[in-house]
Image (cartoon, rainbow, N blue to C red):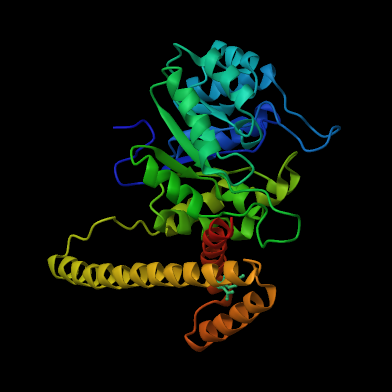
Length: 351
Ligand SMILES: O=C(O)C(=O)C[C@]1(C(=O)O)C=C[C@@H](O)C=C1
Protein backbone atom coordinates (compact mmCIF):
# COMPACT_ATOMS: atom_id res chain seq x y z
CA UNK A 1 0.00 0.00 0.00
CA UNK A 2 1.46 3.33 -1.07
CA UNK A 3 2.09 6.03 1.52
CA UNK A 4 -0.16 8.28 -0.56
CA UNK A 5 -3.19 5.97 -0.71
CA UNK A 6 -5.79 6.51 1.98
CA UNK A 7 -8.10 3.46 1.84
CA UNK A 8 -10.82 4.76 -0.46
CA UNK A 9 -10.63 8.31 0.88
CA UNK A 10 -8.58 11.15 -0.58
CA UNK A 11 -5.08 11.70 0.81
CA UNK A 12 -5.43 15.33 1.89
CA UNK A 13 -2.51 17.75 2.01
CA UNK A 14 -3.29 21.23 3.34
CA UNK A 15 -1.50 24.25 4.72
CA UNK A 16 -0.40 27.70 3.63
CA UNK A 17 1.33 28.55 0.39
CA UNK A 18 4.22 30.01 2.41
CA UNK A 19 5.37 29.65 5.99
CA UNK A 20 5.16 33.35 6.94
CA UNK A 21 5.57 33.31 10.73
CA UNK A 22 5.54 30.89 13.61
CA UNK A 23 2.10 32.20 14.69
CA UNK A 24 0.60 31.71 11.21
CA UNK A 25 2.00 28.17 10.98
CA UNK A 26 0.80 27.13 14.43
CA UNK A 27 -2.61 28.74 13.95
CA UNK A 28 -3.12 26.89 10.66
CA UNK A 29 -1.86 23.59 12.09
CA UNK A 30 -4.16 23.90 15.14
CA UNK A 31 -7.16 24.33 12.85
CA UNK A 32 -6.15 21.55 10.45
CA UNK A 33 -5.21 19.02 13.13
CA UNK A 34 -8.89 18.37 13.90
CA UNK A 35 -9.74 17.68 10.25
CA UNK A 36 -7.98 14.40 9.65
CA UNK A 37 -5.70 15.70 6.96
CA UNK A 38 -2.79 13.43 6.13
CA UNK A 39 -0.03 15.98 5.50
CA UNK A 40 0.62 19.61 6.39
CA UNK A 41 2.22 21.69 3.64
CA UNK A 42 4.06 25.02 3.71
CA UNK A 43 6.44 26.69 1.29
CA UNK A 44 9.84 27.48 2.77
CA UNK A 45 11.68 28.42 -0.44
CA UNK A 46 9.37 30.10 -2.94
CA UNK A 47 10.22 30.25 -6.65
CA UNK A 48 8.70 33.61 -7.59
CA UNK A 49 8.11 34.76 -11.14
CA UNK A 50 9.89 38.08 -10.68
CA UNK A 51 12.55 39.14 -8.18
CA UNK A 52 11.71 41.44 -5.34
CA UNK A 53 8.77 39.54 -3.85
CA UNK A 54 8.80 37.36 -0.74
CA UNK A 55 10.96 34.28 -1.42
CA UNK A 56 10.32 32.27 1.72
CA UNK A 57 11.69 32.17 5.25
CA UNK A 58 14.13 29.31 4.60
CA UNK A 59 15.74 27.49 7.50
CA UNK A 60 13.90 29.51 10.15
CA UNK A 61 10.57 28.23 8.78
CA UNK A 62 11.81 24.65 9.04
CA UNK A 63 12.04 25.13 12.82
CA UNK A 64 8.34 26.11 12.94
CA UNK A 65 7.44 23.11 10.79
CA UNK A 66 9.44 20.78 13.01
CA UNK A 67 7.32 22.09 15.88
CA UNK A 68 4.14 21.22 13.94
CA UNK A 69 5.37 17.66 13.51
CA UNK A 70 6.33 17.25 17.14
CA UNK A 71 3.49 19.12 18.82
CA UNK A 72 0.60 17.91 16.63
CA UNK A 73 1.99 14.61 15.34
CA UNK A 74 1.14 15.96 11.89
CA UNK A 75 3.65 15.09 9.15
CA UNK A 76 4.87 18.05 7.10
CA UNK A 77 5.88 18.34 3.44
CA UNK A 78 7.95 21.11 1.81
CA UNK A 79 9.08 21.94 -1.72
CA UNK A 80 12.76 21.45 -2.51
CA UNK A 81 14.51 22.87 -5.55
CA UNK A 82 18.21 22.51 -4.64
CA UNK A 83 20.24 19.68 -3.07
CA UNK A 84 20.94 22.10 -0.17
CA UNK A 85 17.17 22.35 0.46
CA UNK A 86 16.98 18.56 0.79
CA UNK A 87 19.84 18.53 3.26
CA UNK A 88 18.21 21.21 5.41
CA UNK A 89 14.71 19.71 5.25
CA UNK A 90 16.11 16.36 6.39
CA UNK A 91 18.10 18.03 9.16
CA UNK A 92 14.77 19.28 10.58
CA UNK A 93 13.11 15.87 10.14
CA UNK A 94 10.62 16.99 7.48
CA UNK A 95 8.52 13.93 6.52
CA UNK A 96 7.77 14.48 2.81
CA UNK A 97 9.41 16.48 0.02
CA UNK A 98 8.06 17.65 -3.28
CA UNK A 99 9.59 18.93 -6.48
CA UNK A 100 7.85 21.97 -7.96
CA UNK A 101 6.59 22.48 -11.50
CA UNK A 102 9.33 24.95 -12.36
CA UNK A 103 11.93 22.38 -11.36
CA UNK A 104 10.38 19.28 -12.99
CA UNK A 105 10.73 21.10 -16.29
CA UNK A 106 14.55 20.85 -16.02
CA UNK A 107 15.97 17.29 -16.16
CA UNK A 108 19.44 18.51 -15.08
CA UNK A 109 18.01 19.94 -11.87
CA UNK A 110 15.77 16.94 -11.22
CA UNK A 111 18.82 14.68 -11.61
CA UNK A 112 20.74 16.78 -9.08
CA UNK A 113 17.86 16.37 -6.63
CA UNK A 114 17.65 12.64 -7.38
CA UNK A 115 21.37 12.27 -6.62
CA UNK A 116 20.89 14.12 -3.33
CA UNK A 117 17.95 11.83 -2.48
CA UNK A 118 19.84 8.56 -2.98
CA UNK A 119 19.44 6.37 0.08
CA UNK A 120 16.97 8.78 1.70
CA UNK A 121 13.77 7.26 3.10
CA UNK A 122 11.30 10.17 2.79
CA UNK A 123 8.42 10.00 0.28
CA UNK A 124 8.75 12.42 -2.65
CA UNK A 125 6.04 14.01 -4.80
CA UNK A 126 6.76 15.31 -8.29
CA UNK A 127 4.60 18.14 -9.63
CA UNK A 128 3.89 18.23 -13.35
CA UNK A 129 6.24 20.39 -15.42
CA UNK A 130 4.77 23.80 -16.34
CA UNK A 131 4.46 22.73 -19.98
CA UNK A 132 1.99 19.99 -20.91
CA UNK A 133 4.40 17.11 -21.51
CA UNK A 134 3.54 13.69 -20.07
CA UNK A 135 6.97 12.24 -20.87
CA UNK A 136 8.82 15.04 -19.10
CA UNK A 137 6.63 14.54 -16.01
CA UNK A 138 7.17 10.78 -16.12
CA UNK A 139 10.89 11.35 -16.70
CA UNK A 140 11.09 13.42 -13.49
CA UNK A 141 9.28 10.69 -11.56
CA UNK A 142 11.59 8.00 -12.98
CA UNK A 143 14.74 9.95 -12.06
CA UNK A 144 13.55 10.06 -8.44
CA UNK A 145 12.56 6.38 -8.49
CA UNK A 146 15.96 5.39 -9.88
CA UNK A 147 17.53 7.03 -6.83
CA UNK A 148 15.78 4.25 -4.87
CA UNK A 149 13.22 6.56 -3.30
CA UNK A 150 10.55 4.04 -2.25
CA UNK A 151 7.46 6.23 -2.17
CA UNK A 152 6.92 8.51 -5.13
CA UNK A 153 3.69 10.26 -6.11
CA UNK A 154 2.68 12.78 -8.78
CA UNK A 155 0.97 16.12 -8.23
CA UNK A 156 -1.18 17.62 -10.97
CA UNK A 157 -1.11 21.41 -10.64
CA UNK A 158 -2.10 22.35 -14.17
CA UNK A 159 -0.11 23.76 -17.09
CA UNK A 160 0.89 27.32 -17.99
CA UNK A 161 -1.14 29.09 -20.61
CA UNK A 162 -0.97 32.53 -22.10
CA UNK A 163 -2.40 34.96 -19.53
CA UNK A 164 -6.11 35.57 -19.97
CA UNK A 165 -6.63 32.64 -22.33
CA UNK A 166 -8.23 30.44 -19.70
CA UNK A 167 -10.78 30.63 -16.89
CA UNK A 168 -8.15 29.18 -14.56
CA UNK A 169 -4.62 30.19 -13.60
CA UNK A 170 -3.23 26.94 -15.03
CA UNK A 171 -4.95 24.73 -17.60
CA UNK A 172 -5.93 21.37 -16.10
CA UNK A 173 -5.45 19.42 -19.39
CA UNK A 174 -7.00 16.39 -17.69
CA UNK A 175 -5.90 14.15 -20.58
CA UNK A 176 -2.30 14.41 -19.31
CA UNK A 177 -2.77 13.04 -15.77
CA UNK A 178 -5.17 10.47 -17.25
CA UNK A 179 -2.41 9.36 -19.64
CA UNK A 180 0.12 9.30 -16.78
CA UNK A 181 -2.22 7.02 -14.78
CA UNK A 182 -2.73 4.79 -17.83
CA UNK A 183 1.02 4.34 -18.15
CA UNK A 184 1.68 4.11 -14.42
CA UNK A 185 -1.31 2.42 -12.80
CA UNK A 186 0.59 2.01 -9.53
CA UNK A 187 1.37 5.71 -9.14
CA UNK A 188 -0.70 7.84 -6.74
CA UNK A 189 -1.75 11.15 -8.30
CA UNK A 190 -2.70 14.09 -6.12
CA UNK A 191 -4.58 17.06 -7.59
CA UNK A 192 -3.71 20.63 -6.59
CA UNK A 193 -6.88 22.65 -7.28
CA UNK A 194 -5.36 25.78 -5.70
CA UNK A 195 -2.71 26.15 -8.42
CA UNK A 196 -5.02 24.99 -11.21
CA UNK A 197 -7.73 27.53 -10.44
CA UNK A 198 -5.72 30.39 -8.94
CA UNK A 199 -8.99 31.56 -7.34
CA UNK A 200 -10.60 30.37 -4.16
CA UNK A 201 -14.21 30.34 -5.43
CA UNK A 202 -13.31 27.61 -7.95
CA UNK A 203 -11.21 25.35 -5.70
CA UNK A 204 -14.15 23.13 -4.61
CA UNK A 205 -15.36 22.47 -8.16
CA UNK A 206 -11.92 21.35 -9.33
CA UNK A 207 -11.43 19.25 -6.16
CA UNK A 208 -14.70 17.45 -6.95
CA UNK A 209 -13.70 16.98 -10.57
CA UNK A 210 -10.40 15.44 -9.42
CA UNK A 211 -12.31 12.97 -7.26
CA UNK A 212 -14.55 12.08 -10.21
CA UNK A 213 -11.40 11.59 -12.32
CA UNK A 214 -10.13 8.95 -9.88
CA UNK A 215 -7.34 11.00 -8.30
CA UNK A 216 -5.85 9.67 -5.07
CA UNK A 217 -5.69 12.90 -3.15
CA UNK A 218 -5.84 16.68 -2.95
CA UNK A 219 -3.35 19.39 -2.09
CA UNK A 220 -5.20 22.55 -1.04
CA UNK A 221 -3.61 25.79 0.09
CA UNK A 222 -5.07 26.89 3.39
CA UNK A 223 -4.41 30.12 5.29
CA UNK A 224 -6.06 31.53 8.42
CA UNK A 225 -6.41 34.90 6.69
CA UNK A 226 -6.08 34.30 2.94
CA UNK A 227 -6.47 37.94 1.86
CA UNK A 228 -3.40 38.84 3.90
CA UNK A 229 -1.24 35.97 2.57
CA UNK A 230 2.26 36.92 1.44
CA UNK A 231 2.01 34.73 -1.66
CA UNK A 232 -0.86 33.38 -3.81
CA UNK A 233 -3.49 35.22 -1.72
CA UNK A 234 -6.26 34.80 -4.31
CA UNK A 235 -6.18 30.99 -4.29
CA UNK A 236 -5.92 30.17 -0.58
CA UNK A 237 -8.95 29.21 1.50
CA UNK A 238 -9.53 29.25 5.25
CA UNK A 239 -9.35 26.02 7.28
CA UNK A 240 -13.12 26.37 7.82
CA UNK A 241 -13.69 26.53 4.06
CA UNK A 242 -11.49 23.45 3.66
CA UNK A 243 -13.60 21.62 6.22
CA UNK A 244 -16.79 22.45 4.28
CA UNK A 245 -15.13 21.44 1.02
CA UNK A 246 -14.07 18.06 2.44
CA UNK A 247 -17.50 17.42 3.97
CA UNK A 248 -19.26 18.20 0.68
CA UNK A 249 -16.90 16.17 -1.45
CA UNK A 250 -18.64 13.22 -3.10
CA UNK A 251 -16.32 10.20 -3.22
CA UNK A 252 -17.28 7.78 -5.96
CA UNK A 253 -15.99 4.26 -6.50
CA UNK A 254 -14.26 2.80 -9.53
CA UNK A 255 -16.47 -0.30 -9.43
CA UNK A 256 -20.15 -0.69 -8.64
CA UNK A 257 -21.29 -2.96 -5.80
CA UNK A 258 -24.75 -3.18 -7.42
CA UNK A 259 -24.96 -6.34 -9.55
CA UNK A 260 -27.72 -5.04 -11.87
CA UNK A 261 -25.83 -1.82 -12.52
CA UNK A 262 -22.64 -3.78 -13.23
CA UNK A 263 -24.48 -5.87 -15.82
CA UNK A 264 -25.94 -2.74 -17.42
CA UNK A 265 -22.50 -1.13 -17.48
CA UNK A 266 -20.98 -4.23 -19.09
CA UNK A 267 -23.71 -4.21 -21.78
CA UNK A 268 -23.15 -0.50 -22.53
CA UNK A 269 -19.38 -1.06 -22.69
CA UNK A 270 -19.87 -3.85 -25.21
CA UNK A 271 -21.99 -1.55 -27.36
CA UNK A 272 -19.24 1.05 -27.12
CA UNK A 273 -16.58 -1.52 -28.06
CA UNK A 274 -18.42 -2.39 -31.24
CA UNK A 275 -19.02 1.28 -32.11
CA UNK A 276 -15.30 1.96 -31.65
CA UNK A 277 -14.46 -0.97 -33.92
CA UNK A 278 -16.65 0.71 -36.58
CA UNK A 279 -15.04 4.12 -35.98
CA UNK A 280 -11.57 2.64 -36.47
CA UNK A 281 -12.69 0.71 -39.54
CA UNK A 282 -14.06 3.96 -41.00
CA UNK A 283 -10.83 5.79 -40.20
CA UNK A 284 -8.81 3.07 -41.94
CA UNK A 285 -11.05 3.40 -45.00
CA UNK A 286 -10.70 7.18 -44.94
CA UNK A 287 -6.89 6.82 -44.89
CA UNK A 288 -7.05 4.44 -47.89
CA UNK A 289 -9.04 7.09 -49.74
CA UNK A 290 -6.49 9.69 -48.75
CA UNK A 291 -3.70 7.56 -50.22
CA UNK A 292 -5.64 7.16 -53.49
CA UNK A 293 -6.10 10.96 -53.59
CA UNK A 294 -2.34 11.23 -52.90
CA UNK A 295 -1.55 9.13 -56.00
CA UNK A 296 -3.81 11.31 -58.15
CA UNK A 297 -2.08 14.42 -56.75
CA UNK A 298 1.29 12.93 -57.60
CA UNK A 299 0.18 12.26 -61.21
CA UNK A 300 -1.13 15.84 -61.52
CA UNK A 301 1.80 17.43 -59.67
CA UNK A 302 -0.50 18.89 -56.99
CA UNK A 303 0.38 19.79 -53.38
CA UNK A 304 -0.61 17.44 -50.57
CA UNK A 305 -2.04 20.22 -48.42
CA UNK A 306 -5.01 21.92 -50.05
CA UNK A 307 -6.00 25.00 -48.01
CA UNK A 308 -9.34 25.64 -49.75
CA UNK A 309 -10.48 22.04 -49.43
CA UNK A 310 -9.33 21.90 -45.81
CA UNK A 311 -11.25 25.10 -45.00
CA UNK A 312 -14.35 23.58 -46.58
CA UNK A 313 -13.90 20.37 -44.56
CA UNK A 314 -13.60 22.32 -41.29
CA UNK A 315 -16.77 24.29 -42.12
CA UNK A 316 -18.89 21.32 -43.18
CA UNK A 317 -17.74 19.11 -40.28
CA UNK A 318 -18.39 21.96 -37.81
CA UNK A 319 -21.93 22.26 -39.20
CA UNK A 320 -22.39 18.51 -38.72
CA UNK A 321 -21.09 18.83 -35.15
CA UNK A 322 -23.71 21.51 -34.44
CA UNK A 323 -26.42 19.35 -35.96
CA UNK A 324 -25.47 16.47 -33.65
CA UNK A 325 -25.06 18.72 -30.62
CA UNK A 326 -21.34 18.03 -30.37
CA UNK A 327 -18.91 20.82 -29.41
CA UNK A 328 -17.38 22.25 -32.59
CA UNK A 329 -14.01 22.56 -30.86
CA UNK A 330 -13.99 18.81 -30.20
CA UNK A 331 -14.81 17.87 -33.82
CA UNK A 332 -12.34 20.39 -35.24
CA UNK A 333 -9.57 19.09 -32.96
CA UNK A 334 -10.39 15.52 -34.02
CA UNK A 335 -10.30 16.48 -37.70
CA UNK A 336 -7.01 18.29 -37.24
CA UNK A 337 -5.51 14.98 -36.09
CA UNK A 338 -7.12 13.10 -38.99
CA UNK A 339 -5.99 15.72 -41.50
CA UNK A 340 -2.43 15.64 -40.11
CA UNK A 341 -2.22 11.89 -40.62
CA UNK A 342 -3.81 12.15 -44.07
CA UNK A 343 -1.33 14.84 -45.21
CA UNK A 344 1.58 12.84 -43.75
CA UNK A 345 0.60 9.81 -45.85
CA UNK A 346 0.21 11.90 -48.99
CA UNK A 347 3.62 13.56 -48.45
CA UNK A 348 5.16 10.08 -48.34
CA UNK A 349 3.48 9.24 -51.65
CA UNK A 350 4.61 12.50 -53.27
CA UNK A 351 8.21 11.83 -52.27
O1 LIG B 1 -9.24 16.73 -50.45
C1 LIG B 1 -8.02 16.50 -50.53
O2 LIG B 1 -7.28 17.02 -51.34
C2 LIG B 1 -7.44 15.52 -49.60
O3 LIG B 1 -6.36 15.07 -49.84
C3 LIG B 1 -8.11 15.16 -48.30
C4 LIG B 1 -7.62 15.98 -47.15
C5 LIG B 1 -8.20 15.30 -45.88
O4 LIG B 1 -7.71 14.25 -45.48
O5 LIG B 1 -9.18 15.83 -45.32
C6 LIG B 1 -6.15 15.94 -47.07
C7 LIG B 1 -5.36 16.97 -47.47
C8 LIG B 1 -5.88 18.28 -47.86
O6 LIG B 1 -5.22 19.33 -47.22
C9 LIG B 1 -7.32 18.39 -47.66
C10 LIG B 1 -8.10 17.36 -47.29
